[in-house]
Image (cartoon, rainbow, N blue to C red; front, side, top):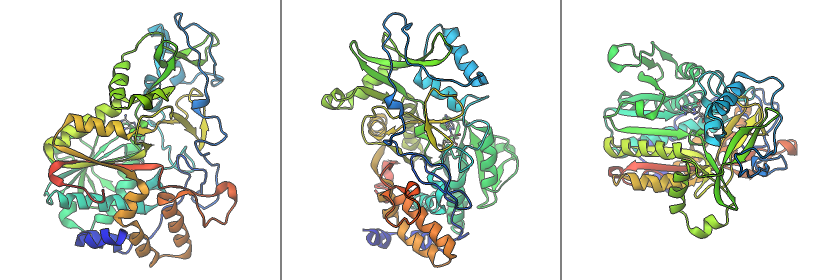
Length: 483
Ligand SMILES: C[S@@+](CC[C@H](N)C(=O)[O-])C[C@H]1O[C@@H](n2cnc3c(N)ncnc32)[C@H](O)[C@@H]1O
């Protein structure tokens, strides 16, 4: 299969896979967001994440009470920090001011992106010193393979001489840096690219600026002559708070890697009076607690919409449902943009090809923690409902087609990751080769690594089937490689 795809690939494609490594320095290894194994940058093991169905208490094991009398019933509560942080005070202030609880989605949004104290806003949360790690941080091969995909799509688009390359939530900018380094020799492509970063965090914007080896000042306006340029490819770079702010009018390639999972979800629970939205309140001891809304909430409309895309028997089995209106809104924006301007979007994330029941999790320093515990100090993320993304995309525009989801392992495998690893292995030290092989396993493997000789508790867990890849493309492109 791999050989067939590689044989069909264009000259550019083969050159990308087999080019000797621009750095030949594999990235250091850190724990994955859902993985039980980890390395530090000097290859010592660090505290590890547990598998989501491990013995560590998961959010889904949290009991909640149903309050039908003005939400005053005592409920399970959680130990907060000894003195309230600014964010905790802010959250309690909203609840007090409103005179009632807030939705899980409002809580998640404040916790992650509150402009003063949100989890992502003021610091670098990635890596061994941070809270979790993502695929681009594991190995340079990940960003390089996304580069292969982007160049293939650009060729399928007919090699436009101007194209927007957008990354949603670029984190440290590692994916794009590896992508640009990998494609830097293809001048026709690099000269066509305008890079757009959609990022809410001022701190991460600075890290991204460094990662892309940028020069110049971000004036925010392409016509003011104050453009930032990535010296890696001489491509202009600009930052935006939302996808809507990315200038329209050019064909656009969008990458969303671990972005959808950070979008706020609403949680519903089946109760005796039907589906009730799970809310967050403050109890008499000033601790956060979950309660159920006694009456329909605005998000119920999205629940109804989502239910229409699901067999009744499937929903009947569930006692919890998560929905993500922001993911629906974002998908709509992406689809409209690609439908009118041309281009493609690649979404890679962990999730399900179906309705999601109860997946919201909090991770601090590589461990699962309670969602309500010291908000702002832990990452919150939820499974992506890829089926909802597909249904919505198909509903919004007839000009796009949706492909996948397929597993990350299928995606990277069919793009030729094996060939890329082989090429890199020809020109590296023994230590780099070990690191490359482990990184490769973690990106495409499934379950525990069979080759592992270290301590059992640190066995690398492959992410190849947990992460899914989906493409949304303008119809004119046809079927994107490698779907
Ligand atoms: C889980 S990280 C993924 C980072 C990167 N894509 C990677 O794989 O390493 C989520 C990223 O999205 C950004 N982000 C989260 N919510 C956002 C929002 N609503 N608007 C813009 N950026 C957001 C975060 O600051 C961070 O850069």
